[in-house]
Length: 255
Image (cartoon, rainbow, N blue to C red; front, side):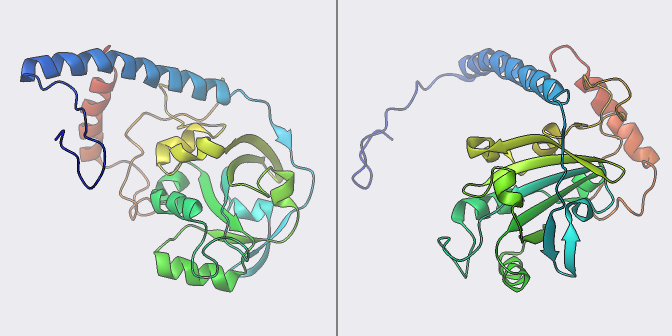
C-alpha cells in the first residue's frame, strides 16, 4: 500500500489495529458525528425561523406545455425548491450536455415523489429552450421538472452567474422567498432530507423543533415506495408496526 503507484507518491496509511481497537476508535469518532448531527438539526430549526421575503414581480418561465408563472411551478404544493442549472449556449458542454457540476447535481437528485409527499416541489431552471432540455433529459435519464428562464428571475435571485438553490413557500397566491444556498452549499443537495432541511416547513416530523402550528407527523409513517404514494392514502398497518420499532430506536439517548 505504501509503494508508489503510477508515479503517485507513496501512501502513508493510518495504523493497522485489532477489531477491538478499531471499534474503540469508531466509537470515539461517533461522539463527534452525533454532535454534528444535532448541530445540523439545530441549524435547520433556526432556518425554519428565517424571515420571509415577499416576491412582488411576476416571473414567467417556459415549460413543456407553454408559458407558466412562478406560482405554477409549485404544482399546487405549498413549497418550491428551484435549482438554477447552467445549460445554454456558452456553457461548457453545450449543446450535448449541461455544465458538468450542474449535471452531477442532477445525477444525485433522489426521486421527487418523496419531496412531493411532503408538499414540496423541486424544479430545475435554465436558459436553454425546452426542446434542448427535453433532449438532454432523455439522454441523461433525468425526470426532474425543468423549465426555461425567460426574464430576470436568475439575476433577481442571485443565480445569473453561478448555480444556486432558492426556496419558496406560498400562502394562497402569494409567494415568499425563504432561503438560498449556493457555492459549496449545493454540494449537500440531492437527497430528500437535505432538500427538506432547507425548506421553511422542514421534514414536518414531530421530533423537529419547529414554530407552533407547523405541520408535523410521526417519523417513518409517511415513507412509501415512490410509485405508491398516490395509491396509499394511509400507512399500511404492517409498515406502522415496522416503523414503530424504528421510532423506538430513534428515541434512544445514543441516537
